[in-house]
Image (cartoon, rainbow, N blue to C red; front, side):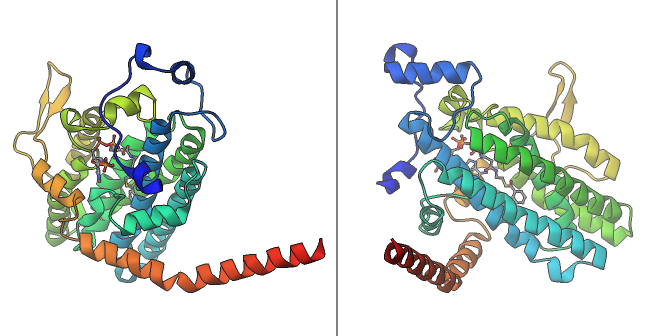
Length: 330
Ligand code: BYC
């Protein structure tokens, strides 16, 4: 049954006339800005969409530890190592809050993990790109966490209570992550010519993959219309991408680095920057499993699951023993 639930919900949004009475009452609650809580009635599509989005988000936090974990043993100073360790640990915590939020919708963490491992569920495209130099730790913090914050700040107002509350806590920690990334970029960009070259190279490689984090263009987004009607999503993918570009351009200027887009320029009439779209064929290839690091990332997750089997078995045996003792005592 759960396998069916993971399938995408379509683009069509029901009109009032097409809604059942229950659905219309639910939509009224959403429109009035009420939070939906786990025991409340909700349309099956709302539940499915939340499980898909929260589950993918949780997987992203966990898989997101891998490219940064890659640099913990090679951080240039003790201080940088301690900061990076703390950040990577935070990501584990974010994954846990999000798995817990998804569990309130009636799906277990084990089921979500199985769906990730079988390829039925996704994680963010960004983590399928390699982190080749220390400057990449700066670019990831600055751009990847920057994009994550841009997406997640509005999600603090998402309509599902447990998700909204998880996002509030996560956003506080993400701000520190973005600052530490920008601080690394600042050091590198103002350092030796070789360090500046590394910082520019990291920006060159992470710019377009960061723009892809917001999802396909609004015209190609399958879920946005319904998710926005249910206030699961607050903004469209293109709106957030534009905000991210507008916010990041002056930050790059301050670093003295060049965003790798010859078309990038301020458009006075629009009050926004014009910019080139990422290569969307690359994005779709990456989310279908064909990115530079997809197989490496999935292999790491599979290994972690297999290596953890003895812990799960031990916990189950302990729980069974406890239950048997309780029955015997009654
Ligand atoms: N990567 O209809 P659309 C982080 C999929 S990391 C992979 O627009 P939706 C962090 C999408 O799932 C950031 N897949 O979808 C951690 C759908 O496929 P399915 C994690 C993507 O859901 C550690 C299809 O494309 N943040 O925080 O309305 C260190 C069509 O897309 C991506 C979140 O997950 C992608 N980039 O909008 C540092 C935030 N984009 O499911 C940082 C919560 C789209 O039908 N999620 N797809 O098979 C969201 O806000 C939304 O899910 C998205 C996509 C904006 C990502």
